Length: 208
Length: 208
Image 1 (cartoon, rainbow over the protein chains, first blue to last red):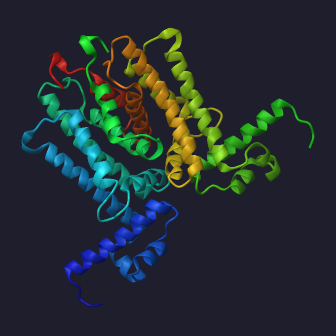
Image 2: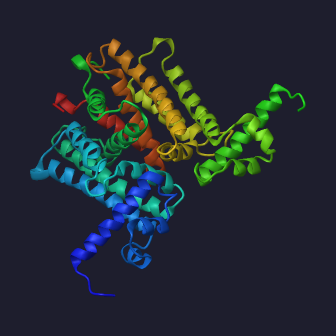
Image 3: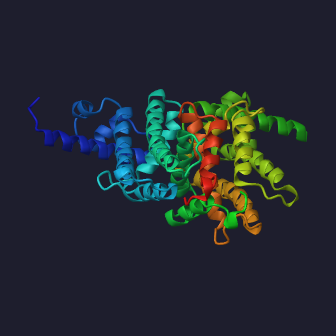
């Protein structure tokens, strides 16, 4: 094996990831084999396995792209001790989803389609289930931090549990991903308007 | 073909549905063939095809069970012109999900696992996509009716769009289904507490 530069390795790794993600998005995780990925990448089996030992590792790398995008959104939202509203947090993350995550500039495919495939596959694949569970804990944690700051500022009830509020916020993201793909007419602006109306206090101080 | 009673037909149909649903829940929709279903049902191929012409029809029948359960929940909630709160509506539907839908007494399996499989499969199967889209329009419509009544009672802003609020409510259901299956420690009571905190007005009338 010749000595290769770091740049060479980064490029090969990206090529394999792009080939795999396109197959996952088109044919589903289950129907895509390592042989398909090797063939689509144009590299040798040995070369591909040097970077990724399994489909699960490849899905992990794809998920990491989407999660990193979410991490960046929250890093910006929470910078300098800011206390964003739930609506601000959700707007920023849904815009990232319908933007760079649904239309990833490097992968060139809709990563949310792969996400939905992984949900299904995780029900029968313990390794994927563990990866998905960890990913959602991480996202929930970001939303929980928003809740924690709002609580510290007296804007969320003192007895609310931030992780529980984070779970509900995460649902508003997962449901958006799903409805955007499956229910005709679901658009980001309309969806956010619905969330805003749901989270808004009742008019005239009426009880909810 | 001998003349058969209505009861006989109902029983045969239920047997096939149970066999199919168990296979879908265990192996996934994609990995289950009509031949598998015929074999598991113990009936002849001709008998099975007399009731269901395809896997898609079988999924439709399984989905119809879950949707009927949801219809009943909303029929009760909305009876006599009632105006339930969003929290009441969500509590009733999540209790139905973690009760009779996740533990269907006839099918004997968790219908939510089948739902997640269908989400993924619908991305590559236009017939399933149309069925899933229609099912979610129906559920969204129930939540939209709750929003409409709250709006009529002055409890929801006059400029809110009920269908959009329904989409956000539906997300809180879809996310619950997913997190219940994939994120350890997700329980109905804790999840509802998180939703309640998210929907509650800010303490002391502070801005949100």
